[in-house]
Image (cartoon, rainbow, N blue to C red):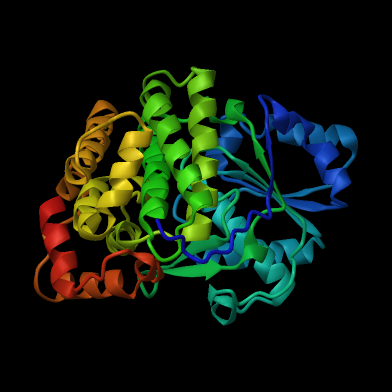
Length: 388
């Protein structure tokens, strides 16, 4: 196998331990954090998820300000409001506790604090060229990998599209992986976010131009952990070992896709979510087997190698081993009650101008540039029809 040329980055320090969120003050002090903005959402506050973080900061005497107004699918208005509040309160750092929406919001708020409030001027990939303010991320879902990724996606509701920001300087300085923070995560969100992580792993694995041995081993091990633990975590949220397995898998997949990129599945999900407000992880899951079949023409050998590494295939030829892996994805989806069709999550039957607009959003999405197989308008419409 000929190796691609590659660069691998993982600037985020990762700390994993049960109840480690209760020690956040010591990490903050080591990082020179003086007055952080604590970013989260109301649901986590009401469920008591933030209590160990708040107690640790309060007991240590570290002053902090709070912004708990992050919605499930954050947008420009939320970022601007939080950034203005942080500037007014003279916060010098960010601590974010939450899922992907919270962590992505915090990333772009940190960007605004350091680069000014013009979001559009900083949109795109590799725009930043210097470190931002200290940033600690504590994920409360096992899905996005945002605690270690270099990217953030924020909705522009007026234009009905996602704004993508990407730079290694956006990545948090520290990610604290505390599986106890996931214990209150509902079953449906556990399943949907877990499938988001699986999509990250599988797409990172198949990005033929940017993939490397480092991203491959991270992707396959993340897949192994998710196939082993996601069903358990979905059925029994109090299973701390299953929670830990999915959380570590999500972070590994996050490191992998940050270095390799994602592909057509994410492009399809981004466009669908922007137009119809569908859950990102759930939308990824529905498109996942169809995207894998589309990419099979270019990625069959990679999928087959993963199937053998995971113990699902042995002496079968690549084509059969690839199909076995896709079948395992569909079996996992069924076992955690992920619906197989877009119509079941509120996506309407598209035709005419709406279908044309949606397909344009898919093909314009930055994720698709890393896909191993070139996609046309006809290709994305065919995938939609199969997934619908």
